[in-house]
Image (cartoon, rainbow, N blue to C red):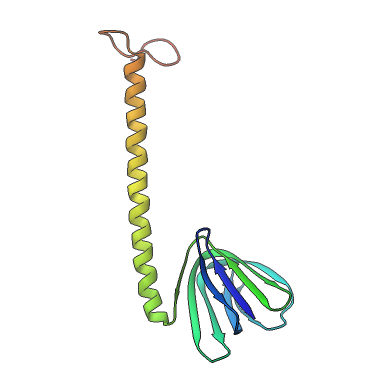
Amino acid sequence: MRLVITTPLAVIIDLNDVVHVRAEDETGCFGILDHHSDFLTALTVSVVSWRLASGREGHCAVRGGVLSVAAGSQVAVATRQAVAGDDLNQLADQVVAELKRSAEQEEAAWTHSARMRLRVLRELSRSTAPEGGHPRHPFGGEEP
């Protein structure tokens, strides 16, 4: 089987010799073997695991997403965020580090956005104020 795991920005996994895929949706864990019927499901935040014909296993933590099986041999996962690894313990460490980095980036973006909103409000206040007076209310009348 072919397994492809993608995010909006990258192809994380693209393997051709996969013999088994394990994933999880809201109903629980399930497995996919070659010649599986066509299938579509929404994944939970979980780990997608696979085994290659050589016996080697791999894992990829996904932040939800959609898994589809087509033509009995094409397994595709589309997710917002994914972290791949061969060892589950190392993968757990990678995921924690990635989540921490993402949280820091989100906090920085939120702070930047809040500062921008404040600048816009200050500029609006200045532009609507009569010379030497108090700012006018943008919908008429004066500020209290």
